[in-house]
Image (cartoon, rainbow, N blue to C red; front, side, top):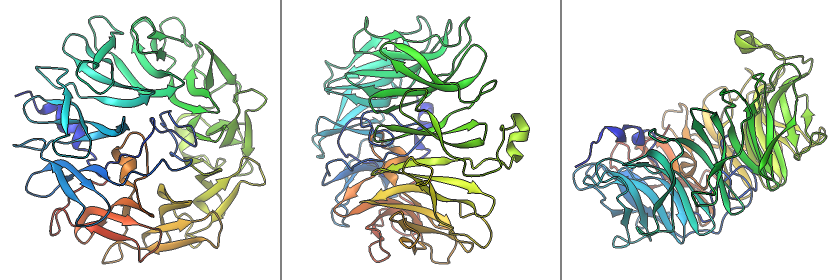
Length: 489
């Protein structure tokens, strides 16, 4: 039996996981890119009638379950580990199956797949025979699934598979005699791009076409051995965007142009604009950045002239202070939690009059408006946990009494409280559990409803919602009584 200590991190957010098809999800409509800052918007993928997830029934610990959104259709699919938790997670939909990481108690944490049947739930390959390979960063590019794994000879490095043991192979070792540091695998075209660290160049942009020769470093933005800290890889309009620091330590927006990397624009001359929450809405990239008007909402089409401030939401701005002073600055709206739905960007922003509330933008100054001041009495409703139900946005917000579940069609009148999920009227905890652990979607559709994880009188359990109070109901009390079957953060 392999060591079990490396499994601790896998239990942090074991939750409902989905299998809605397609490549690795990204912000906005950029199917096939990872999203490290914003919501996974755009059109819903083709519905899958059932979804696999991880749950603890109180008897078998965390194992593989499947649901169709009904109580009778929610059952344990397979007890992966007979003696302890199997901890399945990191699910993606690939080749009409779900691929995921799990531990059967004998082979360690390895790559698995399921077709939705017990017999069809099998380990793909024992990559690390004496330890855990701990597959992570799973992303689909065409007919290939890329991921990172702990190799017995090379440490954590880049792998690929087409779903069989024979096709599950190491691509390239980036750091000879050392463990590779690879993250943010992002699909674009027929290649996968990622952030990787090497001692000579620090964190830079890499690419792979699935071959050793075609896996190479593309950037050395901060020269002389300094790291450019490439991060937030996001695809919008067929362009790969990311943030990076140059040799002067200025952090700005960059893009990939062919096999070259170029700075899109120096937004904050003399210091850093620190782009955050990169999110695609159609062909447009939206992000939060610090410029002459403070930290506000920006957009880009990939050209310097097309990279502009959308709106100075918190007026009377000025250059954002650095360091400790930035924490108490009052001249920025601090756009955050950017989320794409249809052709609209939703986000959280701050003003002096209303505090932190829900906003939306169509990319124009006039079309960037507050949706509703939910907590007008005491200042901020702090919207969070954004997800979609059909063409509407659901989220949690605090109206001054408690945090509740809300829904919005983008209008003030159409932004309404749905319900409080607790018995005593305390703060609700509601999340789209696809977003918690599933790697290629943030929404699990079952008919007209979406699967949720909800903290209620029966603990943290599986619920669903169609956007109405009547349609927001528990699917099954998997761990019967007050104990939880899910871990909701």
